[in-house]
Length: 343
Ligand code: GLA
Image (cartoon, rainbow, N blue to C red; front, side):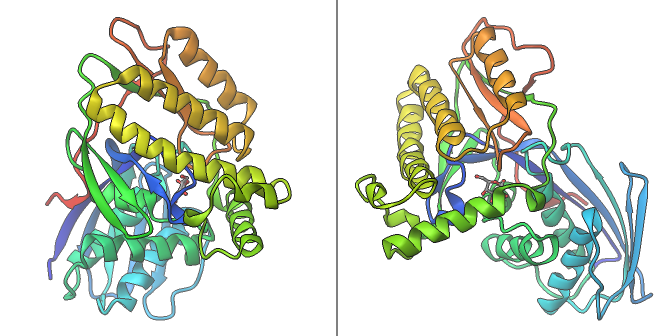
């Protein structure tokens, strides 16, 4: 048990493998250098006093019967409740939260917030910090049960398993993680903000998830991991299109791992483009602002560009060849270390 702790958790970029995590599929994310920092001090007040520095907002609530709240407060209350439920027996704490990942940007500010909060709260308690997989699952419960977004494990695992120069191939069926060197040589990855913000809980995200569950029921499958393109013919629209996306996206993750191993960056670019086309045409999660952003990256000379994260706004990822200047506002992204206590 500590009197104080500072936890940092990064956001993530998903190189490829979108909307596959809750379908027991594959994805290839990496942690970025932007993230959320939580400075925590232990108290004996039986309460959590939290300040969101960037928002200039506060929250204060009693431990024990934690009441629900909206927005960023839902994350703090959910984190305290889930950490306590894990046997932490918190005595009280002051939390100062600050971050550099814009909310609703598709770079997973939510997971960064959950992971930094839970790491800091565990540090103030007697309970040992759970292993990374278990902690990711605990954080995902915060989002599912307290925030109301039925997200999968992609973001939390990416934040917790981040490593410099490395992406991580995740198999969401076996929950195995495979490190993939992300050495792009003179090529670079950039994110470009569409300027449009999304809130997963209020977007079509939960509806997409229900559609995938509906497709599984129609096909008699436990998950879409077992679906094939032949099966799609038995489904009505839009379920057929949703399944087409999930099946082809898993194949693209495998192909991207291969392209990286072969250092075939033009092939990687084509996979990013194909992923985006599938997310737009089959999964229906793009918007006019996102399309304009993809277009800007292509006009600048990107080899491929795709929407990142849950969709309905946020950032677009582009792969730039050597010598091409990124469009104004683009940010170069490289894989950085995963979440940890930094003090
Ligand atoms: C959001 C969710 C993730 C994942 C992606 C889409 O980021 O939090 O669980 O489903 O969307 O790939």
